[in-house]
Length: 301
Image 1: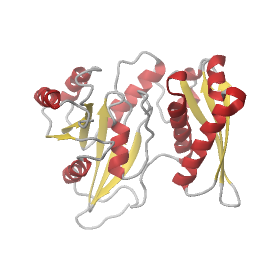
Image 2: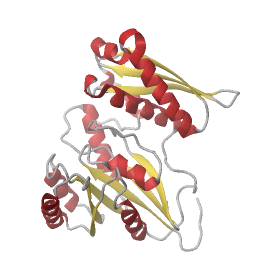
Image 3: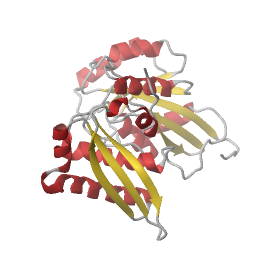
Image 4: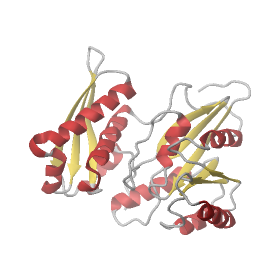
């Protein structure tokens, strides 16, 4: 988009197991929220780009879904999106939950990464809650397996070590013009952003009450003449019992979800948001090819 002397720009694929802190790190590097987060594993479902700036360098961060052993079509689509996000990146950043250690198939993931041609960076996250001796053991083991160009120890939630990591990412980017305007922080459409914000509230407010099998589809996104925006969304669940959980007694829960999502969207979009939610029971929503397109995933057989 811009071509100034001494500019750098490149792509960094952020990969790792579910709940390693990929989205939290991307948000920290960008300096504002571009990806939703929650304590629930597999929160990120699609590839999203967060755009960070460090001096004359634009770092395009590809936030990918967690890599795990897929069982369902949605799982396969998410894992395909994760590996696809790494294709052609200037750098692959493997983020590992240092507190959890070498669990969740980390060693198998590293073995796959070793075969890829892109340079790799190892990031040990959550070091603030990891035991020091265990942290050093994990770092040594992964360095021997992955042979990364560098290793960083950070705490994405507190920001500890993030500035040094950002500087190193910028240094690793190739020379060239920026791909995005200076004020753009993400490639997500406003429709997708709206759906993601509501889905985040589902996870935060319902936690373990609502199973993983739910989705949010933005049915309409309309600009009003007064400058506000009207958003209508449906929350898809697999069973009537799940619908009752989302609605809550007398509709109290969905009202709280809608209010929190509306307030956050108003802040992110910088305008008044009118958000209308309804819940639909659709047992086979994971087989809806159109929905996959709407949430940014490829249809995987």
